[in-house]
Amino acid sequence: MEHRTIKNLLLLAGFIGMIVFSSCYNDNYATLYPTGACDTTNVTFTASVMPVISANCTGCHSGSAPAGNLSLTNYNDVVASLNSGRLMGSIRHDPGYSAMPKGGNKLSNCDIAKITNWINQGFPDN
Ligand code: HEC
Image (cartoon, rainbow, N blue to C red; front, side, top):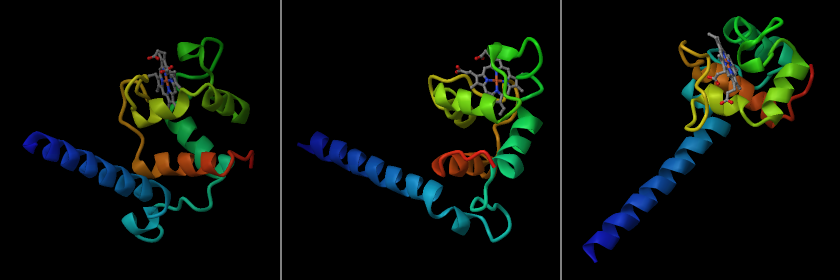
């Protein structure tokens, strides 16, 4: 009986955690970061996404023999990687994915949020 209650409490805590976490990501980002610190509203591929990829990824993922045989030098490359289902797991360091940038620091929450918002908007080529 005691055991069950603790289990249920843990489950509940997990749920609340999930809700809080996902709402941070989707809605309340602006409240976590003061105005101007991280603009995730006006994200475009050219101004928001590609600069992050160029600064952190194309050093390895470009050229005639890109790392992992994965090129990330333009819109089509990035969308192909997105569609393969490997891109965001790697960037977020999710379990089961190869953490990227390999051997480097994880992208900032702001950069990850920008890319996530761009994807949520249907990853327009703009
Ligand atoms: C220092 C070189 C290096 C950098 C920088 C780098 N990568 Fe990689 N990446 C690799 C190598 C090597 C592989 C293939 C081996 C592996 O998966 O670890 C790879 C694999 C991947 C994969 C496939 C992973 C999987 O789990 O299937 C993705 C997606 C990826 N990289 C995206 C990125 C992104 C996005 C960035 C920038 C944020 C980045 N990489 C930066 C070297 C790099």
